[in-house]
Amino acid sequence: MVFELDRIETLLDLLGSPQRAYPSIHLTGTNGKTSTARMIDSLLRAFGLHTGRYTSPHLETVRERISLDGEPVGEERFVATYREVAPLAGLVDQRSAEPLTYFDMTTALAFATFADAPVDVAVVEVGLGGVDDATNVLQAGVCVLTPIGLDHTEWLGDRIEDIALAKAGIIHKGATVISAAQEDDAARPVLERCAEVGATIAREGAEFGVLRRSVAVGGQVLTLQGLGGVYEEVFVPLHGAHQAQNAAVALAAVEAFLGAGAKRQLDVETVREGFATASSPGRLERVRTAPTVLLDGAHNPHGMAATVNALQEEFAFSKLVVVLAVLADKDATSLLELLEPVVDQVVVTRNSSPRAMPVAELAAVAAEVFGPERVESAEDMPDAIEAAVTLAESDVPGELSGVGVLITGSVVTVADARRLLKR
Image 1: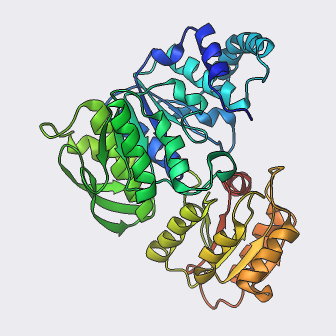
Image 2 (image 1 turned 90 degrees about the vertical axis):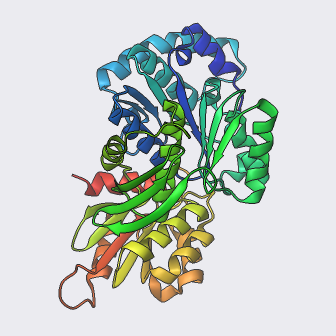
């Protein structure tokens, strides 16, 4: 992949700059982008706005990446837009040393779809990094930074400050920046970028944040400090402190977009309505009971730490078995070390990605962390799930309400399992 904006800019120019037809909220960060984007989308729709949402990757169909008013774009519209874009993309490829990438094409399709709909606002997640990402043609008025950690180090660098510098590249002149709490090494480049381009920043813990949270059936109840005031009794049907943080960030972003602040608070009932209908498939998503089967797309140490914390806080499993499949370039050792204290046994397998870590290699890493007696292997996902359920149900007297299976390690892993388990 060659990261540069020339090709996507040329394609969008040929399309008539569809990304200029609506205002945008642009999100970057290491973890939590999709969940936060989905919450922002839900809130904006509660306030009566027509929304376009662009996120990646997808779980079942590429159409999930391009949503209109909360629903994946229909097949007919997707195909029609592709047929409009493809000939122009061919012209760009003829003129360029490097062809447009898959992500370039889905980005162009999203922006064209949103302009054609039309939408009142687009909620757009970067694909990778920020400064050289295809979505950085937006120059959005509201920019969102979720927590920044180590990931995609082969592209972005192996230091937090290098990664933060790349992600801060989505901040343009005069923007309002909503930032989750960041490590000092990540916060510094963000603040410097804001000063450089004259952007205004609101930070979690200073201007907004989570005041209180309590576990509830199917999610959690939050009291949020927003830019415009306090919002109490907000139910969010998602699990974990990290999702509470995402909710606070999402609320602040919507407040900034709608002009709320020190002198104006958003309607609390509408905010409650927006959060109550939010969803984030593949993020501690329960797809079966007895035993409970959860799907979670954590694929880096920062994300897995959040998942483990949520498991300890919100799920009282007497026995938990993990099905793990990761991509070969991920830190499998750290993922397993985070899981080990809360997991009884692990079944390692591979997902459908050509980049998947081989089963034997992952099993060897797992044996070092868990001990060989706590590790089983399966060559494909159906066998791995069957083995995990059998392990979870074995040696457990009485009902199975206290046992669980967690399928994790990659969004591809979740997608594979979801196709098998989700009706």
